[in-house]
Length: 215
Image (tube, rainbow, N blue to C red):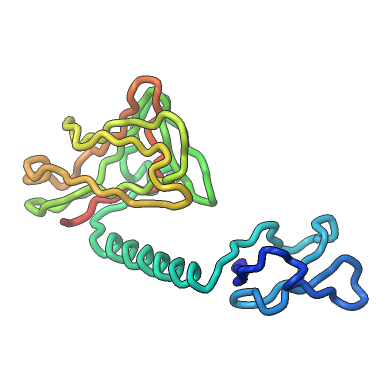
């Protein structure tokens, strides 16, 4: 059910759209769909099926760059998952309960079919497992294209381990940022409380994933 991309340097659709015989205002892309060509028809004529309104367009050079970037993202995701010791999905009731969710002036939400949690002028926290005696870090997933005032502190226990501002840090992508947890915090513990605390007039998050990882 994936959406093809258009591989062409010609942005004039008359150069790569062909009319479908006996169908009014209905066309087929010709030789530019990757991995397949697709029919194009008026929006009002589409019923009871999946559709798309927008396509990405690539030149051959940009497509190769995109594929390399995508492979790098998959490798990074795999690397983080292999290092993960515990994970909580913000915005989902049972995973949050399982990780002792606490907070004030906070709410869940959904963006690009992903659940998240954020706080405006407040805070939220989770208890995550750590390995005793093992250097650990917390990896947090954000969407990099949100504007506005989004500066907040990240605490491990009572200690601020980072002050983050995610406003427009990487438009159009989900990103993971890793923050080291001081070893004295995890040296003799099996769990640590990770807190996201908004600065005054700011939002903490949205946060799409929180995990403790080995480092």
